[in-house]
Image (cartoon, rainbow, N blue to C red; front, top):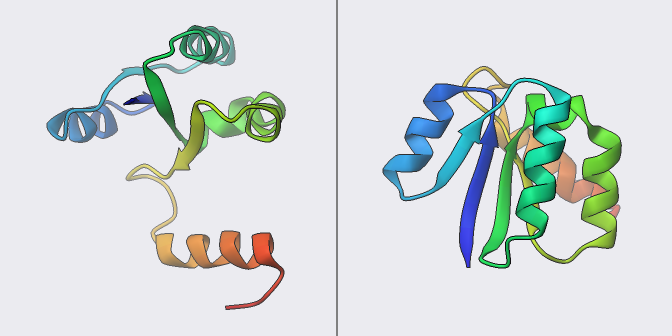
Length: 102
């Protein structure tokens, strides 16, 4: 299984390529949705990484896919222009998921 990245930032793509993750840089909702559709039909991709800014372009679609599909796993990642308190965001996600404040 492979990772794949959809990002709005060239720096994020370059950083991921350094560790062997391929991806694309996109900026509009229609192109993001077309790429997600392509990835859903690619059996070799197990994890889809997508930057927060692009998730915010199509939250309805991303949320539905996360709830209804088991593959690929969709993981939202911040880019370098995102919030600097990544650990706090992770704590909030876990707290919300399990219902216990960490």
